[in-house]
Image (cartoon, rainbow, N blue to C red):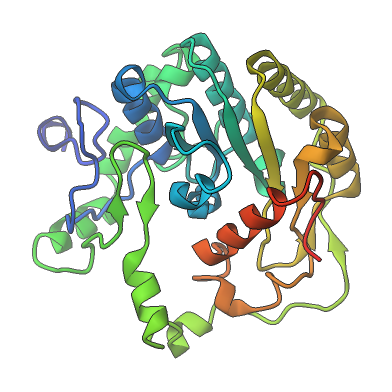
Length: 315
């Protein structure tokens, strides 16, 4: 299996790649989005001259750049610097990384939620471990060992073999190599044809309590330092930025204490809270499943937050 890992590089972390997601390729093993985002940035930031960034977890991917460019200078060179299961630690390291590369952040969207704010270190596992580049390669051995261990798992072996004889793992998302953006055309086509919300997909949309609920405070000493330093980098770059608290299907509001700190640190006029019970979270048709909202939601959020000097959340 070690030889297989070295030859096939199934997680694409050993060798140089320009394209990580070939169209309609079979990918039985989810790739590490943090590593891909960082590596594509490394490959292209000098030629593309990125100056506008979207930071966040996988939910931030639905803030599409074509929509964003309706609200920022059209000539902006935009990049999705995202990670699956992003942590505040990972986002903080990305801020530092862009700054150290001498790249100017003219515009930014920063997408937060309680799960992201809760983590002040890298998550374990092949899907989530932070890119070595972001931590000066201090975790390189652990990084490679994590993927090597995954190759030896029975799950990997079974899915790898199955992928050779089945279309089950064919990727139907389109990946933009310049912006690092995914397009979910197939999902949207099925929705338009009234074929997406099958009984199987509907089964994940559980019934929510109609009583307002709040997340426990997530911002502690480490998070306070990360957020304060992130705000300083934005100030240094004179960035025009918006902070968005995700509209999650669970309808749980961000902690009042956390929200107050974010507003004090980044400026209340820059913070928009879409968590909790509101027009977006009430309708299951705004979601692909119980974790990810659709681009139409992100599009409307951007229209709202850029239409007035101050926007604190949905009406």
